[in-house]
Amino acid sequence: MKVRSLLWCSSTFVLLLAGCQGVPIEKDLTYASPDSTIERTFRQPDLARVIPRYLNDQGFLDADFPPTVAYPSPFMGDMFGVQALADIPAGEIKADLLGHGAELMSEDSVSLTLSIHDTFQVQVFPHSGIDFVGNLAGYSHAWVDGATWQQNRANVQSFITLLDSLGLAQKYLLANAWYDREMITEAQRDSRLAARVDTIAMEQVSELGENDVLLIPEAVHGISTDADVATAALESEAFEWIGMEMLNRYQQPLLDRYNQSEPGSEEFESARAELIAYFEEAWNGRAGTKTSGEENFYFQLVEHAKAHGVDVIAMEDASIEFLLFRFGETEFGGAVRSLAWAEAVPESERGIVFGGSAHFTLDATYNVQDFLAAMYPDRSFAAFER
Image (cartoon, rainbow, N blue to C red):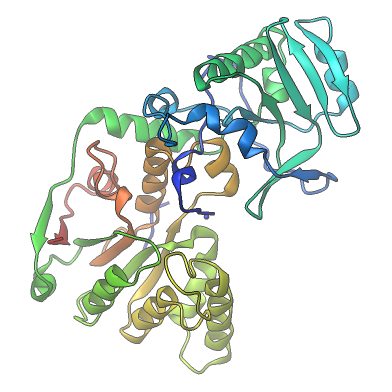
């Protein structure tokens, strides 16, 4: 089988992870993952300080905001005005910026507060990281002020423009490892080319073409209804693989061991134990009672696939850094993730794509099936009536 080339919280905040407004920067940025050798101070973001300015009077994300960040950026952006930065010592920051559009307002053991052009303040946390609901993003960062989200966006852009004007953009901004995917996502959206999806009944799955894809959207994460549908589809013995949002791309070697080893063998039992340990916490109890890893119905779907000779494919490829600093839970960020899903899908053989419904049902033309149709024009797609 050939294959072509994670965090979630319920509530309004699922849709509130956003990126930065773009500034043209004509420089090559070299992507650097968080440096694990640096001693960092991880801080929980002050959500009460940064989030309310992005909400409307009903407490939901202002609908005018997401379109302002729905495009590619060569650099990592910000989370509600918390801008990702490279690891630069406090003394070097002062030498670079003070007297060049920035003035020092205050300083303590973990941060510098700067006034930018005497109009707004930026609090920089050198050698720091974000602790978001127990998920650690090892990026230094700066909190940018602004009473409204519009003012905050303008201030973030002004801060980045200052860095660029001083020739410091490449030094201070972190390159976006997902930029190429974002460019493809934008092009797919602008193409307005949508995949055709035929509606079929369960008893028709064996009639699908040898390379066709069955789409099974999950309406609510944590409720087993749609996983039960996927389980029933596997029982048809009509499929060679199932791709799952609930598993991360870095886990594919583990899944390959699980897929390819004989039940009862040492290799199989080792891989199975790792998967049980993963599902002990991951994707467990989101909309109901938390279970053991072995009882988690997502793990049971993996087991069911194995029992029917169906390979399990990990589709998710979103790091905590992408989710926080490249608006990974907005519509555009979700579409970038859908592209990653499509990249993980095997090039041939009949299979199932199973994941959150938002990745299948957007009005725009960058659902997971739209990417798959663009990659594999001869493939057909089907879904059950909902």
